[in-house]
Length: 125
Ligand SMILES: [Mg+2]
Image 1 (cartoon, rainbow, N blue to C red):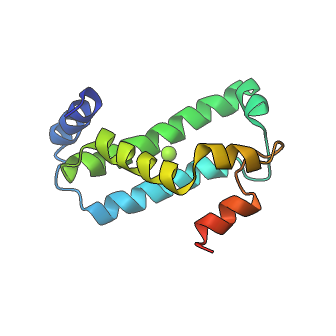
Image 2 (tube, rainbow, N blue to C red; image 1 turned 45 degrees about the vertical axis):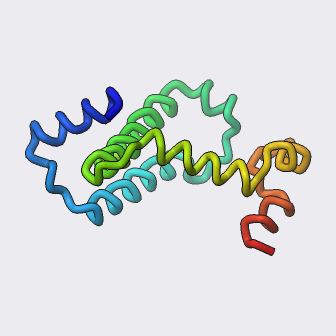
């Protein structure tokens, strides 16, 4: 167990929250992700514009931390190795969407990866 997982386990144990149901944690992750998304409602700020907005950045840090905490709560309570599951998923993504191929087709402006090749691979076409 890594340092942050140990800290999360203590946080859960100290509050008697170590029997939280995975379904409630999944709902909480989604709710906090929606709070993060709400910060961008009616905007399409670039990374630079977002970073230049100090108030926005403070709000982002808080909501992103909420998402991370609930996600780590779930990972710890299910005895998952958080670092390993992230590495496994990155390996999967790297195979499915090879960096070289994606970089060549990335759209300069959006950086969203929502180019036709990405969408084709994602849909399994
Ligand atoms: Mg929140």
